[in-house]
Length: 199
Length: 250
Image (cartoon, rainbow over all chains, first blue to last red):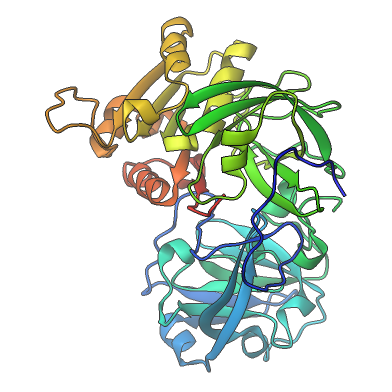
């Protein structure tokens, strides 16, 4: 236990919720992005999966909309300490998007419109753990929350869920992304409080 | 882009509150002594942890407002109504109290004092805090980089650092400060008293062809609006760095 802060009582949530260590509950949906929100034209939008050998598979917006969508209700945990529970999304499972890709890669680097990148082990995208989401709370995903489509990997801190997702590159070797290069944890498991390098 | 020198594990350190500056009726600066503080870069923040007697803890992130100065670290905290941590820091904490911090955190929203390029700082409300660290670092380091700050607050009384910013604008060569107020009586004739828009960014900012670095910090809506206006005006999106303060019950 840390040192006691004189006169601090804290405000325990009245809801019986189990949050990852160091997190607190919010009801709103804060926006955190590095840089201006890119405005992505649906007419030129594409999403690409590229294997480590360079083999690419690309969807335009109409093709993406035609893919089978799932409804997902998940908890979100941001490294800046807020957690939001029971958020409702619709999107395409990465199992679907990666199903035709021949690969022995173990890592991915995700890139977004606007230049943002983030890296993950490939297995964290598979088996129903990740989606490319294009609807939030029953409506088209707004630009400030990553629309037209964002990655959603709710079991990791939210910076891994790249807004404005554009492509996924499969890699044999791990390559740190934007925040991972500047002090944030390479994996980012909120339940192990992996916020920063060395956590 | 600046890359951080945050290496190794960030451990929790005990911070002693050595002084407090009341900035406004809802904001104050806490001057901390943090033994073995590894130093920070202007724009970075810390994680702060409070512990209650029964072991309950709460963490939040706060921007550093001071220039690097040994183990002395200044945080400026705006009280969030119905918040859990900020009312304690603004209303309860006294010199001599202690809590824990770890950091510095963040290697993106950071100004490099060795970069001579012009800098535009655009602050909404308490978003001025990390920008103040940049202004203070510039002065402490004697940087010749030309700085312009546009600081939007609801009224003159809700802005922090106003006296210091006025003094610095007079005494720090190459620093210009423009205030904008979003809620003042409609009879006000001062041209500066209006919401920051395209005109104000052009008049008080830098032309895009000078290649300035723009730092925009404030509430989400403010940052969305200003960063879009800057990009529309021709600024390179990669040089418009943003930090958004969500309304999150801090």
